[in-house]
Length: 306
Length: 182
Image: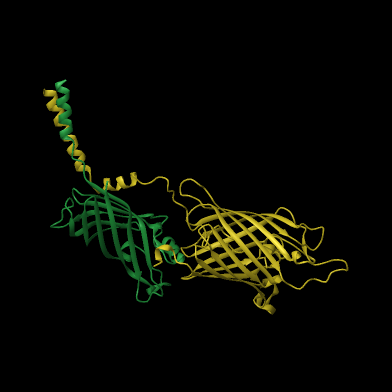
């Protein structure tokens, strides 16, 4: 009997102790303990914009968002004071991108250089998770058509519409290492339906490496380099081609991201930065350029539709 | 045998009555940080707020995942996460506190005006708050509402000079929750 008494006292004592413990900290613990475990947190904002400089990032426009982009590439710095270090000449691309849904975005644009019209689609394949998936992967495909006048050809040769076309495929593999540092690896395949000689490669494979490093909350240094595995002997007319290297800054203002950069590549299309960069950093053939992007919400998120 | 039965009875009797808890994962928090000079409305909705309430003593907590706030403009949402709330660093806001009211009885149906007081943690800063709210008990469901204003500066949320007076210095926060018996 004594044992029972003792036991019951002990029990009562211990339970009342448990009750005293049950405060809000326990309630919070209870919330987290029951949290559905299947939902894993995705890593967002790997890059500030949908482009590093010329190449695309794994960033996607939100569904229903239209992004108007104006990209400018001035002449080379080595033109000296006569052409105000390149500022007097410029190539432009004007384009619009649109987010179709959370996985797919598309874009159309026109380049001054080569009077080239381009279109692309970018599809989200995988997203980096806080725990688990280490990288984000997107697939990017573009096609472009040069609309300049047909070149004069030797008798018996024909210049067809198909000769104007170029296609590009890229796999974008990115990882946000920290809030500041993100790196993107970009194996790329470019196919040009026509090159200037039968000796040149129509298909150029390259490995691209890009990244950004945030200096402050609103300013980041960016860069991209494409190393060609073949097609390095290709020429454009008489000009030899080089690997493209671009270094820039992302500056975020209220409504848009302003990207300033220096590059040895004259143009904004895949054809130019993957295979037909005809200038060299070592000769100061560097072009100053900028991308301006302005976003407009065309379709509101469902929470805001009345 | 008798001993064991007795022991079992005593053990059962001495068990604490299980606290009556009410819970939800779909409470809603909206905020409005629009200022007089804002060119567009700065409003966001979060429908993924979790809350649990102990009806025995009125103690309750809220937990709000910052990344689940939806804005009309995706860019605004990005700025909110990246620049203002730093949601990678501070992924959740929470509130731990108690609701109390002179006529309140969370075990009886009815609508009560209550005072909500406790600690609100936002952007890594915890502050004591006490705001009025209302609670409606209806069977196995308790719905709660509160509306209050926070100063962004109190929670070290910086507004850059560039944006200046286009973002309100204060934000009105609306909380609506329907909790079900657990």
